[in-house]
Length: 288
Image 1: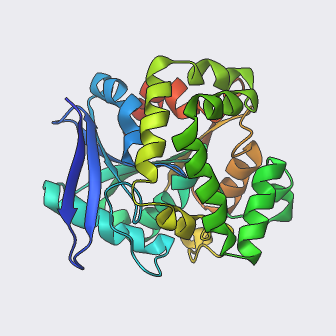
Image 2: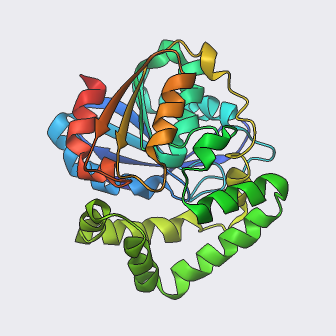
């Protein structure tokens, strides 16, 4: 049975929320949610993780869901929170898996706590945005959002406040618009009842504390990641759909060019929903 609403107190007094899915006695995998999202994005991984024999631990990042905000945080702070959660759970070594906006957090763990890792993986991950050629392959609306937030960080709250209002006011219409903007391969996943339920629950939980935490994180993506990607020696697996219009294939290529040791698996007929379309396969490959 999934445990979705758990918290611990960190050394600095903050609460860290997390959920657990899959096999309670299985190989531990820390799952880093996308953006904007929360620990509940891991709900569809419960059955696949049980099939593979994996224990998925999905923490909320600061300011999301049940986790308290952290002033002035960066991507490189995250491994400290992960280690404290692992110690609380009695886990020494573990794998890390991030999807979409979770990719910088995987890189941070591979950089700072590689001695604790059994594997590291990124699914449909965002890359650094300093490369103009990569930015030009992005969805135009997303590109404008990131460029605007990079120049005017205060815009992040306004952008996300509008998103929160849409979620709370009329989620079915929001889901229809999401599906209309995605390729057919994503639409079939978005039509699954379990995915529809997760998306609504997850987005509401994302903004449980308002938009401040998400706004803080949104401003991190287009800036300097403060991570020396070219010096990360721990190997990272990458899974990427060729039809992805949210984090396009150029981002997987960019990550592979910046990180010294990667293995990229390409899926010609998958989009941004790759993680949920191929959950069992990805988890099995990650821990094999």
